[in-house]
Amino acid sequence: MRILLIAFALSVSSLSSSEEKITYGERWNLLNDSEKTLYIAGYRDGWVNLSDLIKGKHPSLKQPSDIVLRDLSTDIYSLSLDRFYKDKNNEKIHYGQALWIARLDYDRAWSKEEREKYLEITRKHYDKKKSNRLKKGVESE
Image 1 (cartoon, helix red, strand yellow):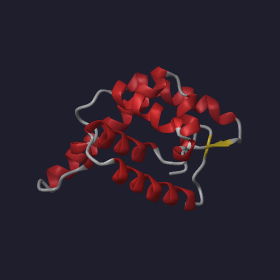
Image 2 (image 1 turned 90 degrees about the vertical axis):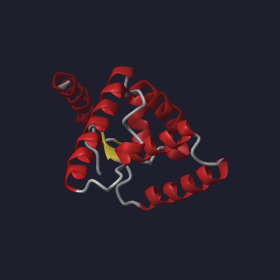
Image 3 (image 1 turned 180 degrees about the vertical axis):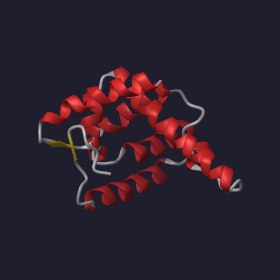
Image 4 (image 1 turned 30 degrees about the vertical axis):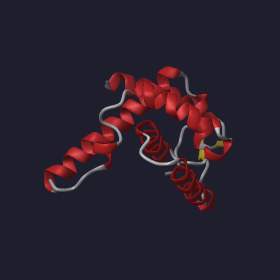
């Protein structure tokens, strides 16, 4: 797994030669299927390990990874993010937030009205952020 993550990091860093800034959605759409899978696997592994560490110290806490990341395949998340970022209004929303929304969509855990209200608030939040774009190869958050 470490070799795959290193390969992913190298492929992403090769894009950093340009100073052009892009959004999270634009960046996602530049990745090939393999890179998307690697990103999601790494993100999920990081959250799960962090969650396990926190739960070891605070067993009663319910961590986001318990709800969001443990039991769906990287393919499901990748396809969900592909759909999510097709909407240009979502391009500035960070990958982690997009994964959370994708999971709630997959579970049908909210109504269409709840989803739209949440997206409206989330979009406003990311529109207000000073650095809601990223340099190719370097995340600003």
